[in-house]
Length: 288
View 1 (tube, rainbow, N blue to C red):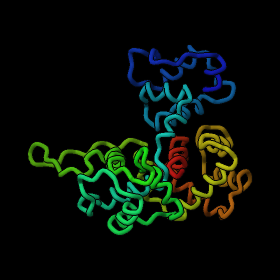
View 2: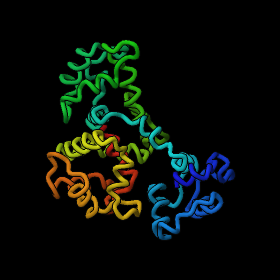
View 3: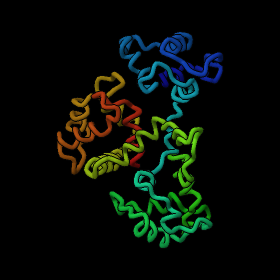
View 4: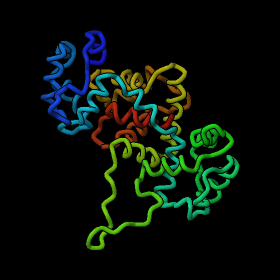
């Protein structure tokens, strides 16, 4: 679709279905028809419907703005906003263990720490042990104070924690009747990233090895998924996933079929026996 949109110079703007904020499969087909995008020669009606289902994260509709972004191939721009895996793992370690960094000994008025002070705080107070200790410099780089690389910005740490949990660091609030207010609903991306933090060390190691291999080849996460999706139906089944790593992308240190099957089961976050491009790319991007 993206190739045809570019080749045909189709303008995908907010004027697409101006009366709607969300679009369903019927709207999607109408857009393809109006834009002169032909998929029927390559894909069956079921495959086209599956494509929309994957884009909409298996809902009956999706936000129009998100569809426009995907059609305009702006996914890489979105992907750049994802955290390095070690930063994601560190933040979810804090949230999953109910750690308040100020109660753990961090001065609430402090705005920065030296890298050495931050590392000591992380190890001694937060009790964080990274899956790969060699990635610690990446953690320090991610939270570095702008213009002062020898310091860690504590505001940035808090900002990232509150992006994952809007109420982080606040006293529990009471709604009417004395009950606690309902927590904000997690986005699909937050759910996947939270799942990443719960992956076993073996799965994380396998993902790291795949990342290392694909970086050498210059492949994006989308290109990797497209190659693993051998029958081009928009989703990846376990058999083709295992076959891909056995025949097309041998990864050093990866034991087959066990490691590929274990990775598939972990990345299949909604447990439907299929990996969608969203599940796959978010998990791969989350470990970079």
